Image 1 (tube, rainbow, N blue to C red):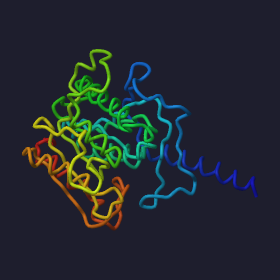
Image 2 (cartoon, rainbow, N blue to C red):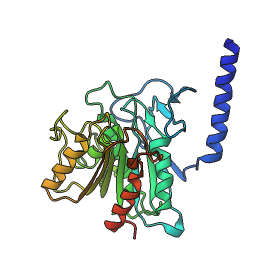
Image 3 (cartoon, rainbow, N blue to C red):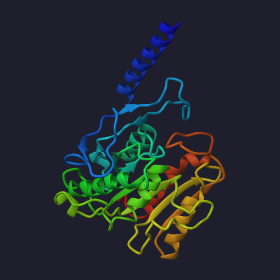
Image 4 (spheres, helix red, strand yellow):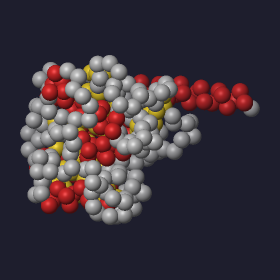
Length: 301
């Protein structure tokens, strides 16, 4: 019986590897975020997919839950030349600052962005940091450095340096929100000329973003410094999400108060953690609204 279980696990791994190889597009460029050892938290253990063969699925499909990320990278999926708008988005997958939903909220999003002429850049930031205080600090170092790194390579990668945004889901939405508000407060000592390049996103998209509000209120956490320099934002959330929608609402209201353009979409149901995968819930068409918003902002010309 034990041998049968082992065989099933091995067969599952082989099928998964074959399916991934056949279906997933390889990135055009993969770059380490840091030239050496990153500042901040040092993650122990070997990077690996923590999803079990019987792990829960989203829209009937498994997902990668990547754990023990000690070497942050960015994977660049360039927009096809025929429809490249010059826009780019740094994507922050979610996972509670414990793991990264790398395909569901990362590579699948990059591939969709390519279809509308946008370069998708998946940030593999350090996890787990969920037990640290603050849990977002080392991931924010990674995202700030990643924004500067993308902008410094914009010409080489076919990107307009004035059209670089950030998009995040759940904990990644928390990270995207902090990246879009703390760009003038770099959380590490400058290393090289890359760190002299602006880390400010030109726009942001927060999807079921977590922990931006004081729990149970529509007030932003004190550490979220919204200012007149904060970029325009797009929000999507379901009212029945276990991550309270007030997180998105609080950020939206703070932007509205300063007359910063923002779109807020709260759907009645749909839960949490769907990425771009379509289900019966209308919230899973959020990316169509985001595409409309990008057009309206003039970013897809």
